[in-house]
Length: 143
Image 1 (cartoon, helix red, strand yellow):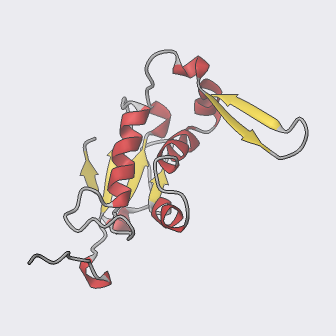
Image 2 (tube, rainbow, N blue to C red):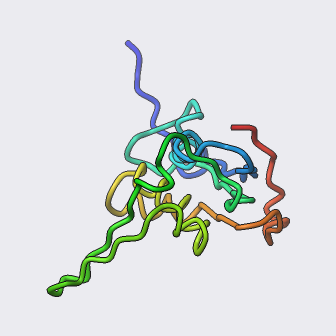
C-alpha cells in the first residue's frame, strides 16, 4: 500500500529565480511566475502548503500585450462611496506603474486568503534591470 508523502518544514527548500520581462507577453509571464511561486514545478508540491520559490521580475516596463489590450483592458477599483469607481486603462497603467501591472496579473492567479498572501510576498517586481536582491543569489530563469 502506497502512502501519500506530506512534506515537512525541513523538506521545503526555497530558491530564488530572476525573470527578465523584456519582450515577454504579460499573461504568459504571469502564469509561469504564479506556478513557480506556488511550487507547482516541484515534486513536493502540496496544494495547502507554501512549497514555492521566490521570483524577482526585472524590466517590468518592457512587457508586451497582444491584440487591442492596451486600449481596451481596464483596471477598476471601487472606494465604496457613491461615484467612487476609478478606471485606468492598461496603457496608462504601464506608463505610470508598470510594476503594478505584473503584480496584479500574478496576484489574481494565486489562491485567495492566507496562503495566497504568504505566497505573493515572495514576488519582487522592478521597472528596470536593477534589483537589490543579490544576497538571495537568484538563478536566471527563461519563461
